[in-house]
Every structure is written in structure tokens, then in C-alpha cells.
Image (cartoon, rainbow, N blue to C red; front, side):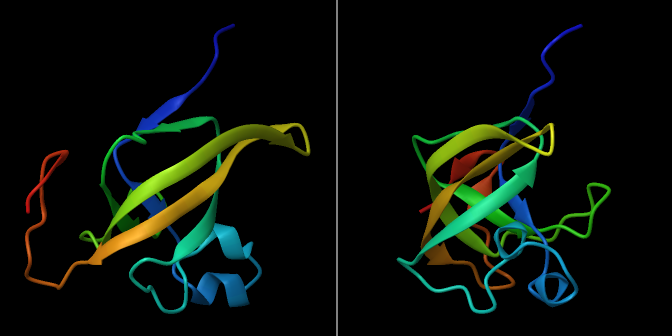
Length: 113
């Protein structure tokens, strides 16, 4: 038996309407994403995020169906814990910059200024 961890190069959260349908608020994007704001997040599983620079914030529909980057964020903290005997990762992120639909702000993992 090994330790199952996932390394994520981005933070992918559900659409805000899924919060209204019963998901936890921290599992979803904010209703309105604002620059410099700090938000909480919650992901199932033991996940590792890069915390020394900016990463993209995405919307997920599940099954690895991801949107284009919506914003550039910095993960401020991430903690692993058990909830109902299942591993979860919770933390905080700060929005650095919103990304317009046709803007390219990341080249792979590298942020483009």
C-alpha cells in the first residue's frame, strides 16, 4: 500500500452554481472573482500545489474537463486532513490577475508577464 498523492499545476474548482446545488462553497469558484481577494478552497484527495509562484485558476466540470485559465493565483496555504475518513486538501489562494478570454498568460507552467 502506498500513499496516493496528486500534484496539481493549477487549481481547478467547480462553477459557483454547483454551490447552490449542494456542493461546499470552498469546492467552487467565487460568484465574482476579484483581484487581490483571498478565497478558501477544498479538494478531495491529498494534493500538492506549487506555492512559490503564480498558477492558473480553472473551472472544472469533472473528469478532467477543464476551462482555459480564468485568473492567475498564488496558493497561500494548503493542508491535508481527513473528512469522514477520506483525505482532503484545503487552503487559501489569492487572485493576482484576471485573464481575459483571448489572453495567453501561461506557457506550460511558466507565467508570461
